[in-house]
Image (cartoon, rainbow, N blue to C red):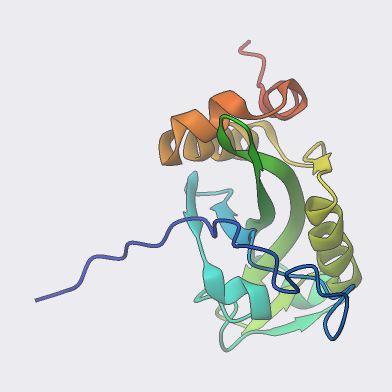
Length: 170
C-alpha cells in the first residue's frame, strides 16, 4: 500500500535563541521557508522540501550549469521560495520569490543560477515579493496552489502578492 504524501509549509517555530544573546544569534533559520516547484509546461505546483538543498526529484541526477545551451530542449520549472510569517489573526504568505530552472533529463543537464536562487531565498525571508519574471500560466498555477493550500493564509497575505500573481484574462 502506497503512503500518501502529506507535506505542508513549514510553520514558524519559537525563537531558537530564546533571547539569550549567545551562540546562534544572527543565524538564519529556515524553519519558515518552503520551496514550491511550479512545472510551467504541465501547470502543476508542489512543495518539494528537498529543493532546500537542491535535492528535489526534478534536480536529482542533473548536472546544472550556468550555460543555457547545455540544457537546450529542456523543460521550464520555477523554484518558488515561500516564507510564512504570523500576524495576530494567523499565518500568511509573507515572502514569495521565483527562480527559473530548466531541466533536460535526456541530456542529464540543467540550467539555474545558484547566486539567483540563494539571493531570492534571502529576499523571500526578508518578506519580498518577486514574481514578475514568471509567465502568466505559471503565475496563475502558483496563485491557485497557494489559495488551495490554505485559503486563510492567502486571505491574510498582503495585497502586493495577490496583485503580482493576478493574471489579466484576454
